[in-house]
Length: 122
Image 1 (cartoon, one colour):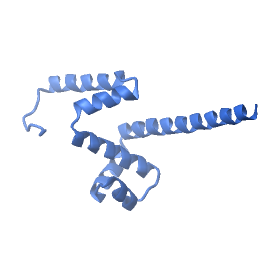
Image 2 (cartoon, helix red, strand yellow):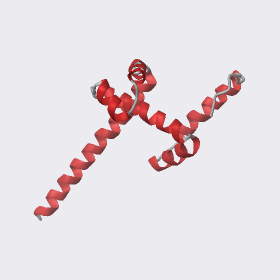
Image 3 (cartoon, one colour):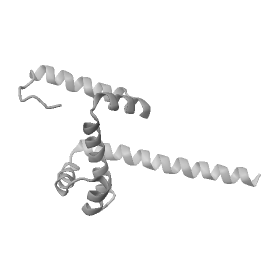
Image 4 (cartoon, one colour):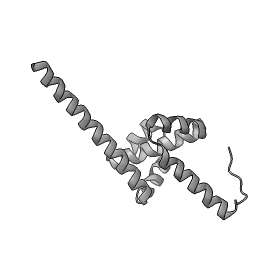
């Protein structure tokens, strides 16, 4: 899908952005997010968004450009562009949420393993 060069009425555009924001805010479960994303975005659009998030995540973890290029199949220019964008509040918030989920998953696994060990002693 190409984006038209014709401008949308600014009031209507604001309403559409608010609608999008509300949709994102109302998503409660990963399965809902997957279903909505896979329906709204083309495969290419979704892959682009996912790769951008992956680049941002790996940059925040200190991975090299070369490693990111090889694994995510993106250009150095894409990585550099995203690195500059990481200063924006939205990227910071997105990465905080990803890191919080990662942290929670690690602790969930540790707690499960702790209970497994305790149960095996009995």
